[in-house]
Image (cartoon, rainbow, N blue to C red; front, side, top):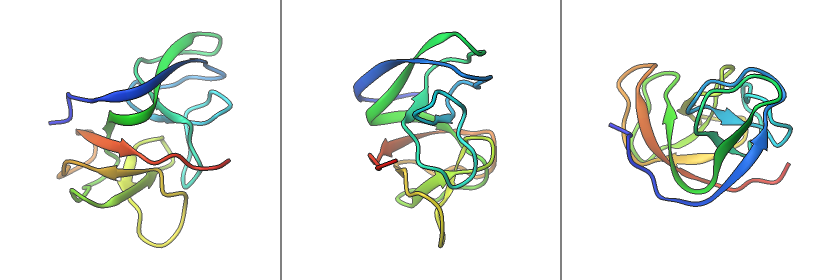
Length: 115
């Protein structure tokens, strides 16, 4: 699951903290927290000061933070992982694949959002 992607735009981002690969990141270069707007998804792990590629538009591979329904709108959990959007938080993607539990990798269509 989730090993494919079709990124339309990938940018180099300077990490401002520790980032795990395949997690949502903020425009400030930090790993995203719960419910926040995001810039995209880190393609590699990083520590502060590293420059890493991040998928900004298109589809990308994201780690799940819980079971995720295919076709559901997703948001970031407290660790920058994809979870189903239910009633609050920034809508940042659409799950193109399902995850049955946390720690699985799924393909997500990124939704641009204003910060």
